[in-house]
Amino acid sequence: MNTLQHSIVSRLPQGYQWSAGFAGSKVEPIPQNGPAGEDNLVGLKLLSHDGDKAWPVMYKLSQALNDIALECCVLECEGEPCLFVNQEDEFAATCRLKNFGVAIAEPFCELPR
Image (cartoon, rainbow, N blue to C red; front, side, top):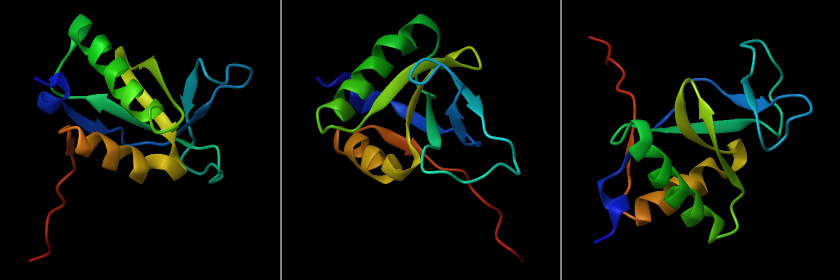
């Protein structure tokens, strides 16, 4: 049985960028008025697993993306393992994860009355 089929990820609300001098190993939130660049990152967090159980799942998600040559990185963010992909690769990444049975949680917005 594929363990990814029981995984749920959610997009972190803010954008990220590599910390100066730490590309590939440390990220920082992009300031709200910061420039939109091609090196911006999107973070995905697991909702279905937490603690020590989340790390191996995140590495499996990372491997699924690496298998199709999508660059990604699993790093700790806000005390949790998060998967970071280039913003321009977000749709390809989520499509690949959905093909493995991973659920992508989306925020609900209230409809006007």
